[in-house]
Length: 253
Image (cartoon, rainbow, N blue to C red):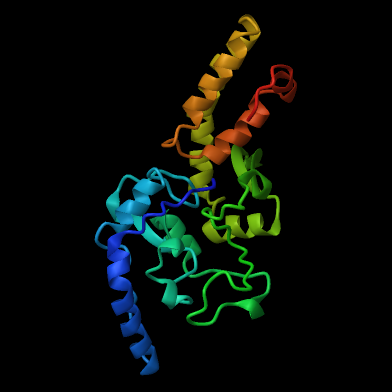
């Protein structure tokens, strides 16, 4: 997971629909009904989220090219926070697996007694245990770290929580599920390691002035905005490029 920056330009469709949709929900709940909440991703909203996140899931960072598997997810679940269903700041793009099969309506808090009640404006007194990738105070490297590990007799790169919030985010979104562990390994083996190998060759045989330039090229290749699994790439670099080499040439991550 990496930190995201939300576009300040809320889609016009949300502004247009919100008053009518919320009025209908309020009336339905007043009648004791359980209405279906829909329409929040229509009229280009889902596409705006998808493109704003450079085509990657907000939680697992996997690229999702199939439109049917792109979900407009609610950070605070719409089943619990219906009044935020059409709120731009509560929406993000998530792949169908993270959203439908893992996260669902989970939203644990440090203190459940501080949960918002209908019509409250977030965050209120809530301290969510699910990381909001759009939270400007979120520092990825302080919450979750990838490390190589043995999983059923095979080396895998696995995410570990560095904080209770990191632990819960991994659990809620299934960031250590089998399919992702396989994709993480393939990403390191096919994308990160070949580029690191080329850099290490230059570090071994090149001049001192070439090494910082090669490092910049390596980072540009791994961290361009469309690359998936950037948090994994960052942590893999920390291990695959020795700390003493990075310190000697002042190679910043």
